[in-house]
Image (spheres, rainbow, N blue to C red):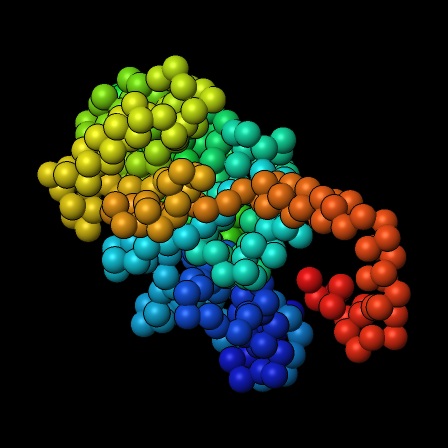
Amino acid sequence: MATVANNSSSSLSTLRKTALYPTLSPRPHSIQPPLPFFPSPPITHLSLNLKCSGPTTPIRIKSSSSSAAAPETLKSRLRNGQTLYGIFLLSFSPTLAEIAGLSGYDFAVVDMEHGPGGISDALPCLHALAATNTATILRIPESSATWAKKALDLGPQGIMFPMIDGPKAAQKAVSYCRFPPSGVRGSAHTVVRASGYGIDEGYLSNYEEELLIMCQVECGEGVKRIKEIAAVDGVDCIQMGPLDLSASLGYLWDPGHKKVKEVMRAAEKAVLAESKPPEEGGAYLAGFAMPHDSGLDLKSRGYHMVSGAVDVGLFRNAAVEDVERFWSTGVEEADKSSEEGEGGENGDEKYWSE
């Protein structure tokens, strides 16, 4: 068989797609997916033998031009001084994940700790979020090498380790994210999604720089040592956990208790006062908005990442409100509203637009 000609109309460049996911209209606050979501040209030693006319010089597939601008990541945006706003996804619904991405959230945390899904359930959510250019963070059920390995192989931009109570636990978490000799992460980088199934030749060179490692501090012992945790090399972000922290302090039913607030404020200040600023390797601060502590309050206190909602909570609130609104009108008023709506200009149209 003759090899593919350089000037052939059937060259490989015309056959390859330039991205795995559709491109949407850019939004000022949106970011591009991480490199693993976009394939670079196939590996350099591959050549194709197809019948065609023309010269017989084989095409050597080369990696992408180094001059191409790298897409923004969560880490690069944080280093640029941006405050990022996100959502937690517990439903494992790709539809809700896609809606969240289209709504404009900077990131979405697919929560395998409290949500019902695992690795295979998380993957469709990563697909949906990638299609909207929204960064995904995976929160794993426990801080272990096995869970970290499976999560990282999916190619999220960030990983969140729960219940980190000291610097040793944080060091272990970082080691789970790095290949030997720097860590203990198992290697299958030639075939997993994180590397574009082996197509992204730059994965091993870039993965440490692009991955956001988040350690969640959510117990009394953890907040006592939070400054040490934040100082661990490789820990990029400290995620505060107000609900578990309030429970560990004896205030399960009262996360807004004065004592809990005092402990939270002291922990926040310890992270923000860490000797190394984030841009020089120190840790960023992330947290959840609460009824007594809004997202804007967190931002004003120096939080770099704020999560303001949970998908199931949003749907629950909307569903409860919808039922209450129906029954609170009373049967007669509802009938009257229905009659007035018939033939009106905006009857059905208003309903479907709500």
